[in-house]
Amino acid sequence: MYTIHGALGSPYSMKMRALFRYRRITHVWSHGAHVQQLAAEKALAPVIPVIEYPDGSFDNDSTPVLYDLEQRHKERGVVPTDPAHAFIAHLLEDFADEWLTKAMFGYRWLEEVDQVQMSRWLSFDALKGGGLDNSQGMAEHFRERQVSRMAIVGCTRENFPLIEASTRTVLKALEDHVVNEHFLFGSRPSMAELGIYGQLSQLGVDPTAQEMMRADYPYAFRWLLHIDDMSGIEGQWDAADAQFKPVVGKLLEQVGTVYAPFLLANSAAMESGEKTFSIEAMGKPYSQGTFKYQVKCLADLRARYAALDANARAKVDPILSENNCLEFLQ
Image (cartoon, rainbow, N blue to C red; front, side):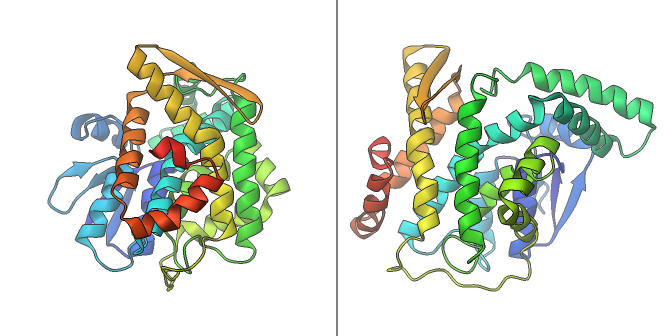
């Protein structure tokens, strides 16, 4: 029995809950005020969700946990069996985890209507009672803390035009795709859908983002509820020689246009000892502080690409090159 110690307002918690549900891995969903303390005590970094293993050990980095579960449980995996498809799925999951999360953070904490509602709801989720005064008091403290962190994670008003334009491009690609079929690499979900779902699950709840999605991307919005629980899905991976679906190319275009410049600029700034970096993408400026974790992400992507054999590279190189993704991986 696994336990997911998470939160409804945590995109990575929702990602991992959807993973366990699809894979039919026996688990308990536990959310509440205890989770942050557990993360501080049991994990290397104080972030959620915290996955408690049957042997009593803990981990909270969603992607390594996903891969670990692939080894422990062989049925209904989310990493495509074809190495080329698996690499692209990983790349899209990484893009979602590290770039789309800025949309989640920005939509939640930039506008007052979102700050108020979501700080109150998240406090309600954590306390599960105790009275309205107590809950709203906690909400004000939490709101102040989160808003104060906006610049650190790059979710400023100056940066948000790029974040929003990129997010809308992703949503449009999904909107066009999901009315025909639900998944990216076959008739079953991959890690890419799970990563994208985790971040967009929050946009489907927060007032401003939910209104935007309902109005402009109604089927992508509804798709989120399908991904939330896929335990009833029985499907197959695309054949190894199948062409990548158009939606994959559209998503990779965002990787090449926005995420690759972001990773490269962050890495260069870290190497030169700079505390901040800036890029321009989609005709819009973006700047933030350097992050060590994203340097690790770039190194990991490059290592995974380098490990591909000649056959896999022959499949991925054309679509990567078409979408300006190949150079940053080499």
